Length: 62
Image (tube, rainbow, N blue to C red; front, side, top):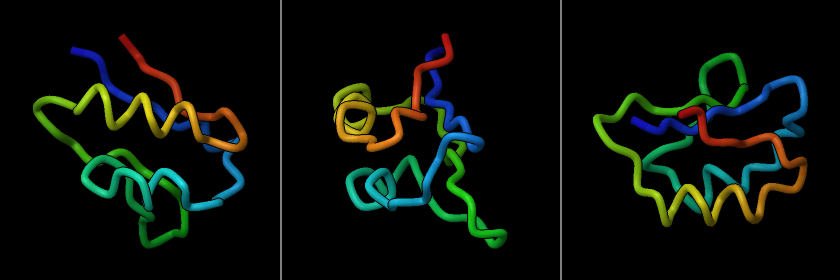
């Protein structure tokens, strides 16, 4: 199963991922973006986030 991964060292915490796809991405208590554990990830929604990520820090881990 493909799973989105956020490279935290490159993330600038702009919030685009959490705004566009809150089902998959959220801010944790430490203030970092994390990927929600799901059985399946919506390809179209995650691809949209990847396309709009300002720091290009979100990829698919296959």
